[in-house]
Image (cartoon, rainbow, N blue to C red; front, top):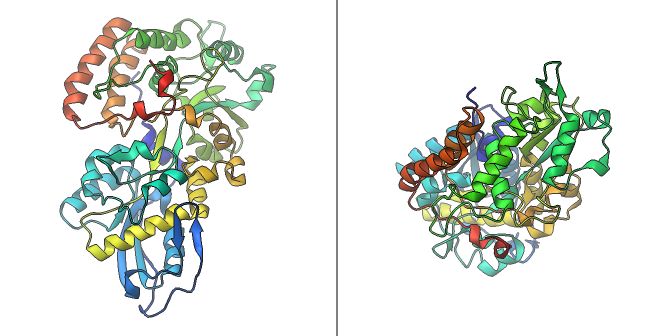
Length: 461
C-alpha cells in the first residue's frame, strides 16, 4: 500500500477553505481626510494610530494571501483602512498550493503584489523578493521583547518575516472509546510505555487476530513520530553544517520503536487509512496529529475527542518533545514601488500590534501565538489544543524552513521501506542517508538549520 505523505505546512487545507476568491476592493477616501483615531496599540512595539501614512495621499496596494486567511486578512484590511482612509487594499486569495507558483512567477516578472502571505517552507523560493525590516520601523529590541524566537528568523543580520504562531504535534483520543475501555483521565500517558499499554486496551481484533480498530493511528504521520522520537533522544536532525543526519544508532533505535507499534505491540496497522482519517472514521482510538486537527474536527461534531501532549521516554520533560512549525506573517515585496513598500511595512507593524487580529489568526489556524503577552489570553486558553500545547511549546524545536523533499525522502526510503516493504532498518537508513546527500543537500545548499538556537539546546547531544 502506497500512502501519501502529509507535510505539516500544507495541512491547513483540511480546514475546508477550498474556494478561490479574489479582487475585493477595500478602503476609500479622497486623500484629504485625516485619521480620526488617536492613541497607540501594542506592547513594547507600539503603533501610533494618529500618524498619517503616505502623507495622506491616496494609495492602493495589492495583497495576495491564501484562502485559509481570507477572513483575518480581510478584517486586517478593513480595520487598517478605517485608521487610514486614504489607503485602499485589494485582497486576492488563492488555494494554498496554487499561491506559491503564482507568486514566484509574478514577483519574478515584476507583476506581483505589494504584500503577500507565504509559508516558511517557501522561503528559499520567495525570500529574494522580501523587503527587510527597517530598524526605524521594527526596532529589533522591541520585537524580541514582544515575540518569541525572533533570533530564529534573522538571516545575515536582517529580518524578513516572523511567525504569527507555532504548531506542534499531540495525541487526539476518542473519549467514548476511552471510557468504554475503562480508562479515565488518570490514564493519560506521560511515557511512551504507558501509551503502548493504553493503546493495547483500546485496540480491537477479530477472531483471526486482525486489527479491526487501531489503538494508535499513525499511518502517513509515522515519519513525524519517528522524528519526534529522535528529538526526544536528544539528537538534532541536522549536523552543524546543515546536512541531514539519519544513519546512526538513535535513528535505528527510533525506527525500530516505531516499527514495533505495528509488529510487536500490534496497535497500529498499515492496512488502515491515514491516521487522521482513521480517527474521524472511528477506526482509531488515538492518533498522532498536529494541532491543525483541532480546527478540522469541527467538521465531525459527533466525535467526542480530547487531546494531550506527546509523552516522553521517562515521564520527565524531554530535551525536545517534537518539531514545531510556524505560520509565517505576510511580507512586503522589495520589488514594489517605494511608497507601496512603506505602506506595506506600516500595515505589518499595525498587524503585530493588533492583539485582536493575532488572536483571530491563532484560533483560525490552531497555532500557539508567538506574541508572549497572548499565551495566557482567555480566548487562547479556551482552546483545548492551544491550552495544552502552551505547556510544552517551549520544549519543541523549529529546525528551520526545511524544504519538503527532506520529509519525502525520510518517508519513502526509511519509513515506507521498513513498514510496508519489510526492509532491513540498517539498509533503509543507509539508503536514506545516501539519498539525502545525493538529492537534498545538492538541491538545497543554502538551507540553514536553526536547531542550535533552541532554548534548551544544551540538553541535546
